[in-house]
Length: 139
Length: 96
Image (cartoon, rainbow over all chains, first blue to last red; front, side):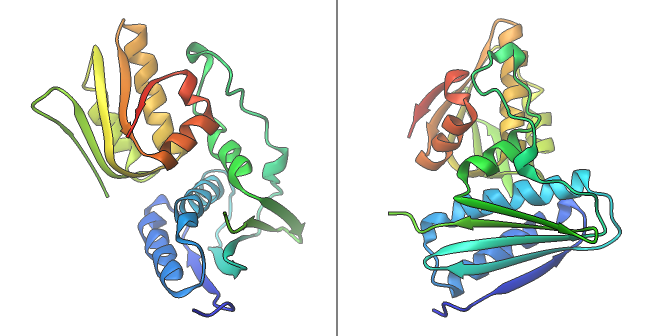
């Protein structure tokens, strides 16, 4: 149990990387002092952000994912190089009260990420996009 | 890894992870079903928005033809995601 345990993973811009991300997260939870109950949420946040970056950011660079313990919670950081600015906090809202006939899956990933994260920071500098998501320990 | 299959009792079982990688397979499977379908989610460990999209697309199609997609044995954490997404108002859901 190392509170300073930090892991990095460099990812190709492909959905095919998802199994490698799952294995990476599993190894992180085994080694770091992070609440196991956060595992589902961490997996979900990572997938939603990663898939969004793969789909909408145009770049030839790999995507960097970092996981760091934060108390018994965790910080996730995605760094994407040579991309346009996209702050997920500015994304259009999803109307979850809309009737079935009007519902579409579009935007649901970003919406869920904003809903389940405890804190989100976004920085954009010299065409490098950095998104940091904090999940706090749950009681 | 996702396994989705028809059972002898008429239900459809889904096991594993319904994520962006497995969603196309699940969609293709469910596209082959009509009427009132029951999806048993007892062994489903994980679902993302890609999986939610599969459920939504299938449910809309079935409802449009007079059927529906009913979700049963839904775990607490997946039920939470349904709640956040407003799916609890769209689907007939039975918790585990």
